[in-house]
Amino acid sequence: MPDKSNKTTLAAIDLGSNSFHMIVANMIDGNIVVVDRIRDSVRLAAGLDDHRNITPVARERALQCLRQFGQRIQGLPDDAVSAVGTNTLRKARNSSAFLKAAHDALGYEIETITGLEEARLIYLGVAHSMAGAEGRRLVVDIGGGSTELILGEEFATLYRESLHMGCVSMSQNWFADGKLTPGSMKKARIQSMLELRPVQDYYSRMGWQTAIGASGSIKSIGKVSELMGWSDAGITAESLKKIRKAMLAAGDIKKLKLKGLSDERLPVFPGGVMVLSAVFEALNIEHMLVSDGSLREGLLYDQIDRAHHEDVRDNSIRAFSERFSVDQSHVERVRKTAMHLYDECSPVWKLDDDECSSLLGWAAEVHESGLTISHSQYQKHGAYLVEYTDLAGFTREQQQTLAALVRTHRRKFSNKFFENLPSGEGKKIRKIAILLRLAVLLHRSRRDRSFVDLRLKIGKNKLKLIFPDGWLDDHPLNKADLVAERKYLQQAGFKLRFK
Picture 1 (tube, rainbow, N blue to C red):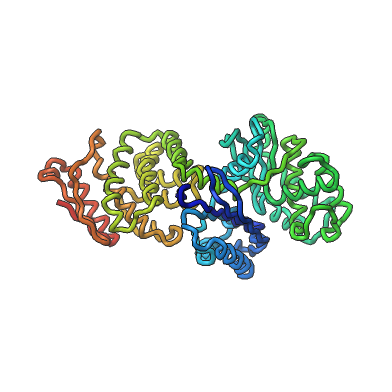
Picture 2: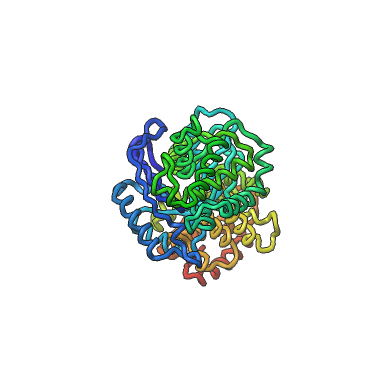
């Protein structure tokens, strides 16, 4: 990750459902100083067809924006750029094909984050931009296709939710014809309240000292509230009520004239107003501050944390292991052996990057998580848990990769598990999986000792393990496992030898 001493420029890119944003900043003493912001109203969510595919027109509009972003940050190291996709890329059926083209256009990796990870990063961005707000905070972010609700204190989240409603989706559902009628506004309110119903009691019981809003919709509503003279600072329940009255009085989006409301924001403004109105009503909010920080700033501060070896993903893996009662002493032995094998093989197999090393270590720590369900085919249970549990800090693609490693750490080894991994990383992850398999196999006895004097001879698609004289004869179970493993790997086109 970026090193403060010689890599001071960072970039964060948010491929949102309504707009694409990019921030370029310098890192100074652990803080960020923004030097450039670029935004383009791509309207990706509006570019989904009836089958949830990104249309060619929307695709080209998005790629053109990313080409411009790419020109601005050209030359930055790969680990200085964080680019993520949100709700629309989570939903789109052809998101994988789009992301490949998007990578080519931007010149950097783009990953899709879950709604809960999006919520964590939003809170991190808000917390850093409003550090003076003390006590428990409720943070609300209305995006194009989802709305995130987060409770947190200082820089840590306590509870997160991502709801399936946003300014674009709500505007498409009830205001697509441009009409602002009592009927359409009532239906939008009901849909929003139904989304909020499962979570409103919990949030209300937990409580908070300060409510803070983020994102384009809330910023726009806050600007209108203040410039129209309906609020001194931020958004109030009364200012929202006056905005709704103004919408009804206009009767049509084209006739809606409010100070601070831009023509660009206008088409999705009604949907955002109705979502925020429902949040205010369901959670009994009277006043909300508006934050300049959000997802992009959260991405930048997340990069800084990782640069200082404070990776939230390590904590997520630790909590996951505890939750599913993983045998810590055993997985630590497996992890050490796996990392020894990695250190030997990485130069030849070109695995020498921090992400590969981290993935192997994390996979070793959670590979037995499926035992909490059943010993039979526990690798399948573990893979499911890893892929679908909320792991803070991980992108959706990273969880899929980690799940593939857990799924293939024993028994049948098929290349099919690596074919659909993101960005053509399948060949690399396949070799990491082989190292994990061997580490698990060598610790079959589960005794508290490590293997010594194990030497390797490494080829492109082959590996030879050289044990101390007589070791295999003294360990017949390991020898039998290696014979079986040789057959498994041979079927996948990899040659394993040992003596």
